[in-house]
Image (cartoon, rainbow over all chains, first blue to last red; front, side, top):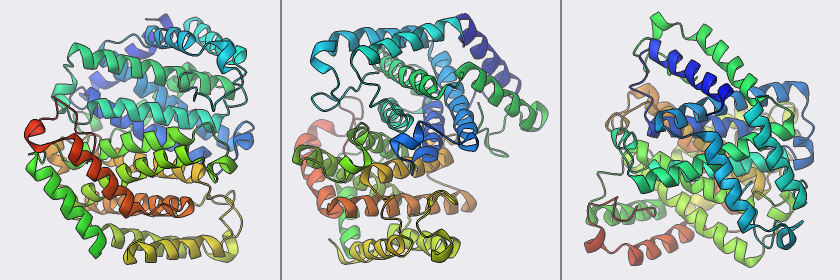
Length: 118
Length: 118
Length: 118
Length: 118
């Protein structure tokens, strides 16, 4: 795993350990926590147009940034308890998406085939 | 941003650029895509007990790993279009959680105060 | 509970009973299942503009309708195992929203105060 | 649509109309609002065991009931703007699930085939 993410993972691991919270941090529970935080993130953007969401006012951006931090924290923690290397997993999915959505066929289109993959 | 995540961000940026998909990748749309992928991740674990979720069979773990890759990809992409440094945002939230949940008061308890923060 | 929803609840109860699935249908698991189905619903609309989402092509509408059916099914089932009357709960929240968002102050605005309540 | 749900739908329609919020209530935005509320519901149950979630203390149950009300409100509203009859849609999916998961093959098992459908 990458150095910076390994460092974040370790900090989270220690944060949880000294509070004796490992008992709560099962993959199932952490997936729920992740869903809860993503729900808060989505709620910040729900009434904005797509264009407005590109140009957030400073207060909204600060709240969105905080939610992104929560989401990243739970995601890194979940990957850690499962022993999954997040960066590798993301590259592996991107390899697959590059094969599946060749640039010529899918250029400019979210209709022909929904670009489900990033 | 960290070297490894900057590299993933850049690869995603290029993947999107050559397909002319920037038009779809607004923060609003990407937050929805993130919610969709987290939904798939949650669905993998929904009928398992918390204990079972700690010890996934190889097929389930492979699917969970793929979903984690999708979630990480959309999260990194969303942070990128918003200009947010994910690692910094996660550390900032963890700073806050360390102040808010002091180890002595919250040790072993998810009841007294739900440890909403990672 | 309403006649029609009581009927749906009872049908779900029987569906689960004959398959001996009550053991899986805890509130926690059903909340995850609900989140998974809502994720699928969100994914159907993620790349559309808000305007496009008002005018779905027949295939997308059919898929969205099917997802709405899944979401409704899990929601009714979750309320049933918790002994909550969904219709009453929704009216109670709407009572609260009517008090909180008086029509004159919030007319036409999703900015001043996000209309989090339906 | 059923009488009770038609009544709730109509009350929501009027609530939105007098506030001039129809402009925000596109299917896309309502799907996001639904995801946000489901996230709050999931968060209430995230650290509980499945067994604990069957036997909620009165405060948690009151919060869960309120979240169920929010989820039901947005779901009914979303179905309404799309012109979908929720009760019919749920029964249609249940018809399908009865065919797909015959009772003898799937009895007692969430493993052999995840009972994704209620």
